[in-house]
Length: 287
Image (cartoon, rainbow, N blue to C red; front, top):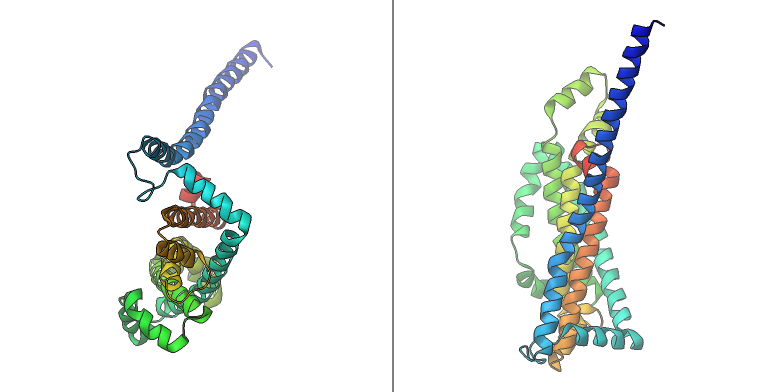
């Protein structure tokens, strides 16, 4: 190799090394920024709790109206030590899980039928939309007549609330698949089953998972309504029982539990999005 070629190679190596050194710090701030955003998402709740505690300790908030967070925490430990809180929480989680599994299955099947078939849409979509418009409280008396006030009534109400977000988002996701992708699949010789498995369902998956996130929130809303009538256990029953004895600390505790469960459920849905949509460019960046 001539001196000129050696000099050019050395310069190229120096340029590459400098570019790598300049690029490596740019990735690190992105990681720090992402962690900072995660911490920032918890900043407002933490500040709210601190201000709430200070106002309660200063006597500006009456314990009968809104007890201090420290009192709510002490109440939680007391109920945990007696075992009542964990029992009620477990019962509510089982009801929510059973209702969610039933409602999600029904909503997914109906969404696939309507998403693929205009005939199915004409036959059942209008009826589903009419049922969806009925409020929980309006349907509750009839559900009690049908199923009583036992576990079946509570699971049915949760399933009813979960069905519609899954149904709507499944149908929407199937209808929004790019027709060019379908045409490309047909050109590649894919059959109907392969088109559905490799193109349509993956393309509809972001919308379906969005429906799952909405359905998780709706499940707890429906369960709260269900557990206020004739329940002998559960978080909703705990709140109603505390209301009878004006135990605002227990009532606030149940509200906090619902909020934490909602955060955890949303975290699970986001985890599923990152795992199942790793191929998607938008979700890939979010990982």
